[in-house]
Image (cartoon, rainbow, N blue to C red; front, side, top):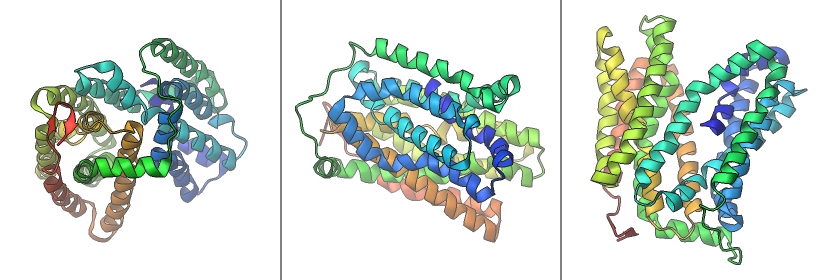
Length: 372
């Protein structure tokens, strides 16, 4: 949560940066892209983390991210902001790729619950972060946000102390070749990655689309800004509950069974939301948030249970695929919405999300922690 609070600073301060540097919307959008571009390097980052030790990257990341994001207000020009955001993106990837591997080492039989707690931290950050950065700007101005740096450094020190004896050291004598390790990982988990692609397809057409366009859609339906913004907050709060429940439930009922239920429930809940009348918007938004965002901790647990030789690379492949697929679908959705309208596009998106369901049935069954 502490780490991702800093990465959530960009959206609230974007209007200030646009005014300060006279940015076009294209240049403003490139800032967001620059923050996410390092996600494409997740398999490489996973390889480096496996070779040099997982915990060191996780320990350093909050401090690096805090420094780079808190200095954006002091950047002298647009290029400097791009560099700071790229550094943040790399740091963020080095935090998120190895973390599930560490959780597997320290969580024993409660892997699903651990992934839920991890995911809850990320979900909470997107609610808390904007409040913190706006408060900081109100107190100190945009150039005074650097005062938030110590909190990230303190979190790194806490992680250093906490993970000192818990994490199993990596084999420093093992030479890890990226191409070979990537090929081995893909070969070992071919069916896992195919089935996960279906899950990502479902999530991209539901969670990614609705999180991006929910306020806009409600505004076009005649709702005020309070309802439009409030509905997004409700969606995020429900998502927190969803990721908490699904990881823990999957420890009991099985990953595959629960993922099949989520893959059917997400498009159905989105269609229900679109059909709902005015008085049922809130409960349908809650249902949509509970279901459509809740697959991530289960998928992370599934990957870590599959006994990949290079688990960080496997996690990196998943995160890269998630970033690429969701970005492409959001761009495609935007083009379609420009042509036929937002509401019709949302219906099409909900129907298209069913396309991912057959892939979920391909998830291999597990016995004693190994793939059949």
